[in-house]
Image 1: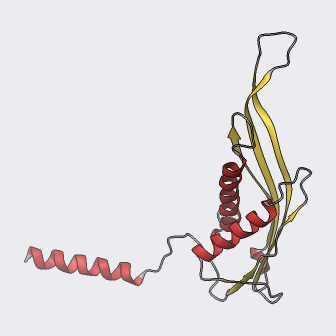
Image 2: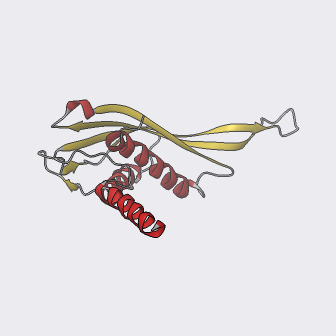
Image 3: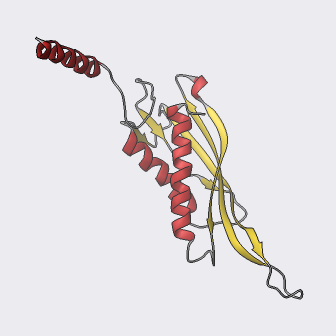
Length: 173
């Protein structure tokens, strides 16, 4: 008898879970939203990395393709539109160490690559979901930037696109 009751409880619990709907991506996209337009972001940073604009735009598109059922279009009639521009791409020391010689300036012990992007998102059917915001991410490194730049930029792009995606579709503050 106990096995029958336990079996019924397990069956009922499984039935309740089957009735629930959820997504693993955490995205909360309105069901009527079908398309999104993401024109190539402009690079207005004083220090320009030539491929950054295209890389960042494509990273956001890839994130949306992999985490949603939205179609990416170039049409002006898209349900949602992401426009953006890179406003800063900079490298600066974050810690210094003395050379031990008072005639020599201190050396950078670690440096930081920072990327700031300004994003405007509009959703035609619900203006409450629109936003316009700067997103900033950085990566620390030691040594010369040239040998680490590609990896840092890829990591920062991933973080930035995650922040933008979450702001637009997960409503996480």
